[in-house]
Image 1 (cartoon, rainbow, N blue to C red):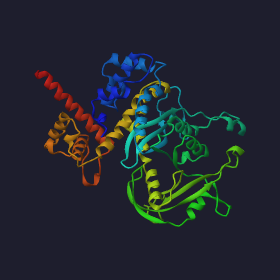
Image 2 (image 1 turned 90 degrees about the vertical axis):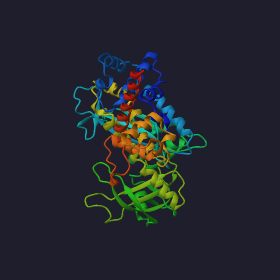
Image 3 (image 1 turned 180 degrees about the vertical axis):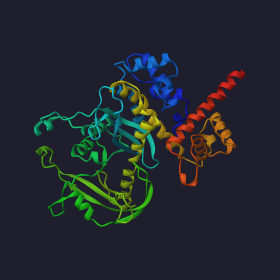
Image 4 (image 1 turned 120 degrees about the vertical axis):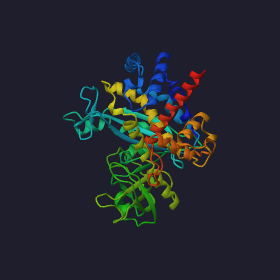
Length: 460
């Protein structure tokens, strides 16, 4: 139970930003004060969050300081996450890229191309640390906002090879996260953007494992030393097991129940032909394919298929299903980006430069992680008595709102009632509360608790 998530906004801001090094203790205090105001209503505008005009001006001055950088603001959160990671036997480091669409901000400077090159904005690379068994989000292990740089006109193939590639951000993240402690196993999980040899090699050098969704028809060396091809070979293998699977909603697609087939096995992947001789050593990996058979999907939807490459030894069906479940955790990092965009409204911030926005992002990104952590917290130990872990005043407020006995309330009931205050209907078909209703309900509870404290103060 991450008790710091249940702290007041002031205490949470102090824990998260109280150790930032900005070359002036006054800037550190400003970071804590600004974060404390922002976390009370993460989706509000900066002026509304800061309340007073002098506080708004102070925040804008703070965001213009050269020593106030995204990395400096995030550093304490990264260190806290790494400390948690070292204490767990198995960690998934789920990495993904998202676009921050700022096309509507015509006067904002420092933006780059996104999407079909007609849009303007930033790209954000995130590495989220997740415990696979409980789906607990430990925090953001590393993150980098960056601007897409277009290819110069007339660039030759030789020049293009020497120019830094956009995909280099994937390997930078692996290097910056670093190696695991001896008693811990870290596995970098990536979508098709991570399917390139430099990513595989960087994971090997950093002494961490990887699980990547394959997208390229790579050459593989078959048992008879003939050359085969990864995707074709994987799809030719017959299924070895089947299992029901709940496909979550995503990008306009409805959640649905389906059945997945699975096949797996070892293979030797050959390096690309254009690699230097020193880097042409083949890599021994395992491939796991899960897919929907024809006729199982709704009309108009593409069938689900994952062809997964992993460095983690996979010898049994149980291990193969586990690898597939690891990849299914990838939606959590998409949720974290949604928390930033919807919960913290990062794309709606009224700042005039990409540099300023990155600094705002340094304050908001830990808040987006906190939204996800509240959701995972609400799903832990639902039968346990809430009184054993929830502060008495907080529990009394929620119990009073739901007209229940505080001493008898279970943790699952407590969080359901918090979500109800945020608009959760708790119908049988609704499932568990999501981060949006939990967050809104949590803010409402905090407001009620402040009212209780104020009433007690006035009585004294």
